[in-house]
Length: 288
Image (cartoon, helix red, strand yellow):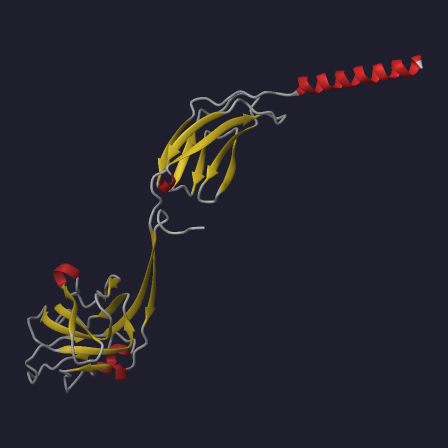
């Protein structure tokens, strides 16, 4: 009985000794110094003095992310002096960060806290452009030149051919070209054309819109000064994506002035596009 009692007592002392030994093996790391924060659009950066204390294995940052609806933990190497917090939002007010260091034995330092509000995340715009397929049957004009430049040349993909309006003086009204788009546009649009040469290029023209080919409304006036219409035969023109002011399925280009001062005008190629513009604001839209 005495031997059993001695054995139990010895085992207890041994266990206590091992526990004390394990406790002494733990390393409490030093804290980081000069903790501060800065804000950017949709981001927060935490900064500190680069650690030099060998008791630090890495830096741990814990915070609640309202966008994700959960607590997030991010780690920074001992060789770092900062940590980027991505995908933050101004609409969530100040973020609260808890910062500590972790030693090689897994022990943590005392926790430091810091708060920072994010700048508003950047609004992004995605533009998708689709060329509308046109055939010669979709084109018409009030002033086709009888001796050269049939309007079908606008669609042949060859800048060496051209469309030419009446230079014989038979049509005294402004010369126009009309296009049946065969679909209604009510979002954004753009168009492209290539001049024939350095003369007889449009410098002032009205883009008209219609849904029935009978009633026409001005979509936008384009000029050399305001929109950069080219007068160099080597410079093609492509408009910016523009908002449709109203729905239209047919267009008419009425040329009011040319760089030669003549009523007639020429053009080598023409294309029209349906444009989709998607604007995403992370501060107001869902972005899960």
